[in-house]
Image (cartoon, rainbow, N blue to C red; front, side, top):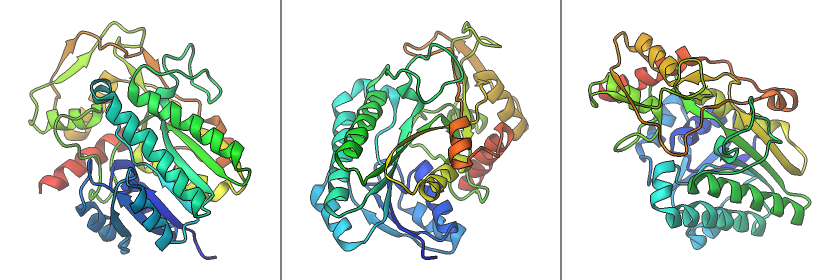
Length: 335
């Protein structure tokens, strides 16, 4: 059976690149569109080393409507996986207009191009931030939605836009995947999370402390209502997360709006994650306790039973694999 031709926006980024690898492994023909603002063109070569296939790469921005028209005009896509977007919570508070312009306007441009060119299926990269501060745990897809920052607000707005597009176009399919906290890297050590500057996410920050790039880890808050007083999150291996996208393309064959949590369903505290990294790197990771950050919540972890029931998807890799692979990727970058 001939596999779909799929456009992956943001396909040289952290989650995007891992998803491209999984797509190629399943025989999909992949075209990547990325403006390289948070990634590197070299990732395309790394994908080729892993898969033996060099995906077509187009440098371009989803804010550029003419470029989108050109890309869609040149290819007959059957689906789009949409990762392109700015994603730092702190930066979104400082630069809200950049986030609304890039994430929301860019997605409107992308959807317009899809509808113009008859492409009727999108898998969208959303986030657990749309649940705000949940009243209870684990988090289910039908919980009330709210946000505490502009980044989360852009995801929530886009979810609403997708719901409206599905209503207006009865043959359109939109799959919304609400990610929890991706960690880890591909087993090859060739692709992984490689932030420029100070990492926004906990795992790459811990890696930099372990490597001696930063003196210590700042643990924000030790008085939360959790097992050890530090914040609890649902960390998911990036490969498991990537497979969730391919499963969504393969299992959902009808029109409509479909929403799934992608997480492990298990909460891990900051100190537990730090301890797992210590095991992976074979040494102590220094940390200091700091004041809580505004907007941080006690705990957040997913109920993923809907994805299991409807997609047959569940995670296979645990915290130890996440930490080992993240450290192996870092070491491989430096060798």
